Length: 491
Image (spheres, rainbow, N blue to C red):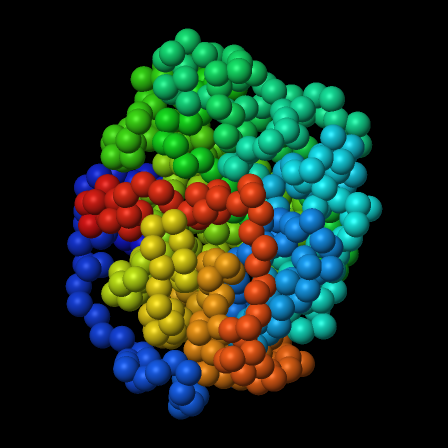
């Protein structure tokens, strides 16, 4: 296998190779066929549709049902959901990634403590309404697919006990507080039992096999209960904090991989990204767990599913992600990642192009990519013209490094405004089409029924008291992620 620098041993990234591999990336490149699609044109005006896609492509949007429509009055939530889907259809979108966390899944599957909780009874299909079931059916009437968007490792947070750590579950397989991961900081402060109350547990340990089993079992039950779901989208299967995890499991795994004293994992774990590029032992240890889970997930998925689609997201810089166990370049080479969606949240279209093509170079031939452009995210937002430009820039990158560009995702659905809807349906989504994984181009969407004024009159959101922008998956509240990534890679 070859990586983006052409070397066979593409997994063994060193500081020197990163500098060599990245030096050419920032050269000036022209946007082929992009400027004419956006320049100074008012996105509400009719636009020449010569660049609009006619072949199937992903036109996805990421959304959070609990935070959008958990209202006291079911008719209100239902109406807002329908208005949002009307807006998605008018925009020409064909795929919805619906976010749910493990406490929501527990409610969805009837686990009493969660299904009867005021925090999570929204998901309980027997409470007042079935929001996921209705989202699927209502979306399908608009020729929009719904994919479950779920995190295996991160976003383990709950007003109740996190299901993976709950040994008292009645309907689901029992969890175990020992499954939590431990950060280096926690370990050095003396908290070495994953179940200790001072261990944050915001992420499960990727090397805990029983947690792999739990996740696959629970996901299987969700898809059995909702056969209309069109796919599964995995959020960043790995960590965010680079000093995670150093628990007893990870130390044992380290010792078996390197035939070394297990306790020495601590000496190869750091608080910053850069040191890992010259010392990969901890990286191999955490990637071993995510590699194992993704391989199992892919095998499990292909054995039980027919036409449903499996996809993953992460950052666009594999080296930065791999330090966190998000080993998507290798997974792609192994054939375990049918579709990869790199998050490229920036208002600079030059950066967007470089980042998308950088990810494509790591994925290589026979891979398929659909970059995620930012509507609004934790670090900023884009105006309509920038979003349209970035969609076309992604399209123009098709075939780079032998990688297919399959469309785009948009983050996040709460920023799908009337202006954005009108802009998208004018250009680049003038004509509707099916997602990339379908052969046919036909779409049964009904569009053009809502004027700008009617779209502006809609109120498709009812943000709840537990809505926090910082809780949105993908929202990064630290320094600008793209700048940090380039700096840490030496690019």
